[in-house]
Length: 190
Image (tube, rainbow, N blue to C red):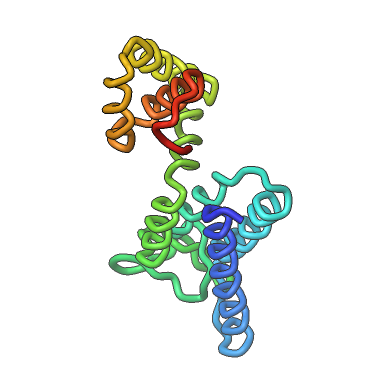
């Protein structure tokens, strides 16, 4: 399992424990659960099914954490927020909590984003018009640029290029591997 899948599982287990504790507190201590809690439970179940069971919509975990950071989705009887917590609506046992920044989920969101930066940036790239096909075309053009540049080099120059292999961008490394394979060179082991 990849590290991004581990991150998804850890997030779902952590939220599941929070939900279990909230339900326990609601039954044993008489706390009232906000509508935001029920929305959070529903979202947790649906996103969990889609991501963990079906393997689709992995970007949904990011959005779920973002909504949890804003306290739109809540997984506890205690609503945590910077500053004071207000209720948009409170009538008897019906509570809708206000939007605010939940510091705990903000921390989880930052860690999750760092772990899954490629997946999240890929999703946002597709959202804003950059598709995977566009990125592949850009990669191919850069690789072809480096390939054309390096293929005209002499053997001595290629030796120097391979010594600095790690310092080149990924596109240049791909082009150097291609040249290495085509010319049947023995400078490096890949």
